[in-house]
Amino acid sequence: MRRLAILALALLMPLGTARAATTDYAMDSANSTVAFETDFGPDKITGAIPLQKADLRLDFANVANCTVDVALDVTGATASFPFAAQALKGPKVLAARQHPRMTFTSTSVEGAGDTAKVTGNLTIRGVTKEVTLTAQLFRPAGSTATDLDHLTVRLSGRVNRSDFGATGWADMVGDEVRILITAEIDAQG
Image 1: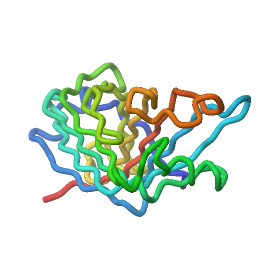
Image 2: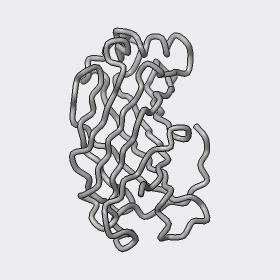
Image 3: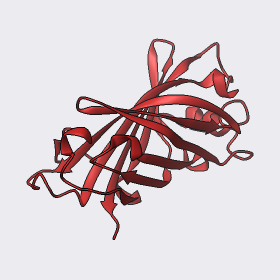
C-alpha cells in the first residue's frame, strides 16, 4: 500500500462549519486499497481486494447524514503467498466465481471524537450481516483547514469469516479477518 503524506483531521463533527451541505465524493481507484489480515497458525496471511467503487456522501455539519457505499472485486483478490490467494477465491472461502462482488452499505454513522462509527450491511458470498467499522478522514499535507476537496478515508474493522459461510481450512486459518479500507476521494461538483 502506498504511503500517503497526510495530516489527521478531526473527523466530521469538529469540521461543522467547513461545509454547510452534504457533498458527494468519488473514489480515486488507482490510489485506494482494501487490505486484510488473518491468522495462519503462528503466522499471518495478508492480502488485498481491489475496490470497484466507493461512493461517499459527507455532511460535515451533521455526521448522521453521511453515507458510505463500497464495492469490492473479489475476483482480483491477492494474498501474501500464491496458495492463499487461490484458496481465498475458491469455493470454500469467498467463492469468487459465484459471488464476484463484496459490498458494504452504511445504515448509520455516529461521530465519536476524531473518529466515526459506521454501521452497515456487509455482503460476502451472498450473505449479508450488519457490521460496524471505524472511520477516519485525512487531508493532504499542506492543505488548509477548509480545503475538503481531496481527502483520504480509512475504514477499519473485524469480521468472522464463518458468519458469511467462508469456512474453508478452518483448521489452519483463523476465523477473524481484520480489514483496512483506504480510499482517496475527491469532492464532486
